[in-house]
Length: 110
Length: 117
Image 1: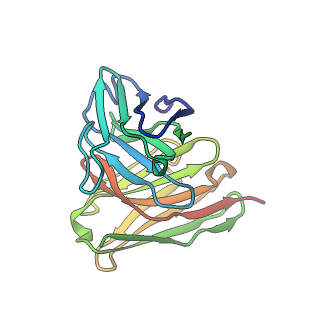
Image 2: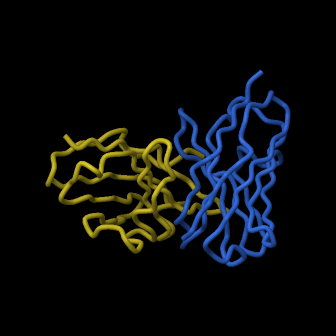
């Protein structure tokens, strides 16, 4: 089975809002509310930004928000800042006790 | 604070074995399920395996089932991934990660495993 589908790249200007989509199937995103999002800078540990579709861990800015509709989840970053640049991955629990990731989206803040 | 530190990566020939370890600190290790996730240049992040908080249940990705074994040692606050019959496509940075609400709330920095003749 293949992974979740994300756009390869997105970009935006400081202060703008962007949305990254993540499309799966009824066996993962559509079937469970166990969708999470990660920010990753090469050479560093990935950082949890959103869990259970729309929950923010302590310390994560409220500029980051998550949602889900059917088999597609979305991460929205509002008020873009230069430090938001990096790679973003979605992940979901999948039936039969496994987890699946998206291919990653590179965010560029112009 | 929570810390996860991987070790044991290196270069190994195809068909050989290697064990990577993850030392945990800053939390009650025996209360959490733990995962291994790997990152390859081509495929991005790929979930590898999970072990339940008490070590009783383990699940694996199809790509490693029968070749990799995940284990944990609560006395040593450590997580392990024993990899055998290694293939070039197993070349990746291997991260350990703590489970949180079916996601991964803390990650290590990763250990590079290169499978090459």
